Image (cartoon, rainbow, N blue to C red):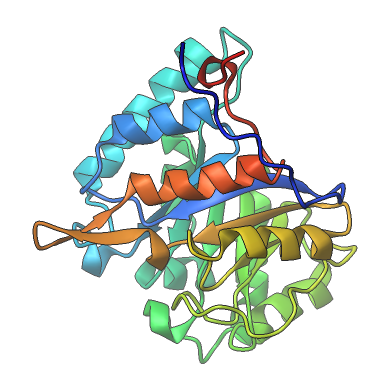
Amino acid sequence: MSTPLPDIKSSITTATRLRALGFCGADDSVHPHLLVMMAHAYPVVEFGILFRPDKAGMPRYASDTWVEQLANVVRTYNTQIADTAKGNRIKLAAHLCGSRVNEVLNGQSDFVQQLQSWGFQRVQINATAVNGVETSRLTESILLVATVMKEFPQLEFIVQKNEETRPLWQGLIAAGLPPNVSMLVDESKGTGVLNSSAWPPPPELYDIGYAGGIGPPNIRQVLQDVAEAGQGREIWVDMESSLRSITDGNDVFNLNKCYKVIAVACEEGLMKHPNYLLSE
């Protein structure tokens, strides 16, 4: 008889729902098949792929060949398994950095079209200097970015929301926020520093996610805090730096660390283990 998973009483009593558990930075160090296997078992999981051409193939930044392989596997899964079984499609988010953000800021949408054809459902715009983006003209880019967003109504666009990106997100709101836009609260600007103040509640106008210094060591407290902050809305959390490990001298994406986060989210009642992992 298999050993049952621990029955830990959740400390989360809010009606806040976790729409995605984001694991960002999957790269060539992990086989795409493993990502699909984990996402199949836990449909709330969303894998984020970083796109920055000048770093493609380096740790955290997948090579073009790897992305194509992932896209082919996900496409097969979504058409042969998810659609036929009326199940959940694999969640993929493209996190744009560097020149890929500059393209969107200039109103160019060719790569966004490519992302949609690859099966990505969400596109995150990391318009910060630390991500290699020219940020001096964010205000002038507002209407161009909005045009790209409106061109792809089936995609959800995520704007990284912090003080540095204020001209962009505040300008989009003032101009009339497209309905397919949400925002990621991350004052660390993608550097993996934990938020030092209280997590903000979602505004009425758009949905939000939370990032910055989140990972296996603190995920339980973070989930409890953002569940309370969410006030019954759908929210998501995203993490990157905390999922890395040095193995045989290489910087790799660690699925064991991803699972530790999943296990806590299940214990807290925000997602569930598949039935075949549970014993009577």
